[in-house]
Amino acid sequence: MTGVIAWLRDRFGRAPPEPNDDEEEDGGRARLSRPYVSPGNSRRTRGISGPIEKFYVPTAVLRETQRFIEAHGAEETEAYVFWAGAVTDGEAYITTCVYPTANARHGGVKVPLRKMTEINLELRDRDQLVLAQVHSHPGVARHSPVDEEKAVSFHEGFVSIVVPDFGETPVYDLRDCGVYVYTATEGWRLLDDGEIEDQFVIEETVLEV
Image 1 (spheres, helix red, strand yellow):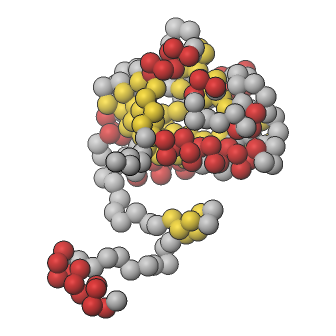
Image 2 (tube, helix red, strand yellow):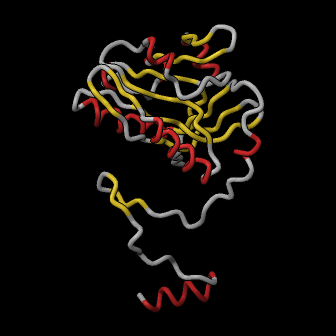
Image 3 (cartoon, one colour):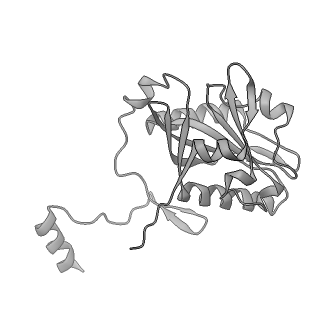
């Protein structure tokens, strides 16, 4: 092994990173620390200049969202997930699932204000923004009055997705969920299938050729 590391150092100028104590176990999978920190001085400082008109969502984000919602659904509790990323010219590029520590029960879920502050600070370090909220319901995929009053954002084009049946109906096809968009003129509006197809692009994160 020492010979391999020496060859890599000679060939590429550096050796592969050694395992370290910063690795954390997350659901049986090792979660590595970031090798460097994003500058936090570009997308965040510009903010979102106008309405969000289109979302690009990788399938990896859908899979992680479904896994988290199903785990809570097995205990018959609702779950909350935030989708974070960046916006360019009215187009949102989702890159990250955020799993907040929440007060979850069968008929409701609440993210404490202090936790939202912590999330926003962490995302600032990563130069990202919360661009959508996803949560599960025990029954139909429709907003409740609390969902509309306590949303984490009221930016034009912000999306709130309700996953029905504690995730038994998967989030993979958003047309099976309740997808709401916030507008200044109408408040929260439920999108129909055609609008969902027009506003969301699902991008496969694995390509086999």
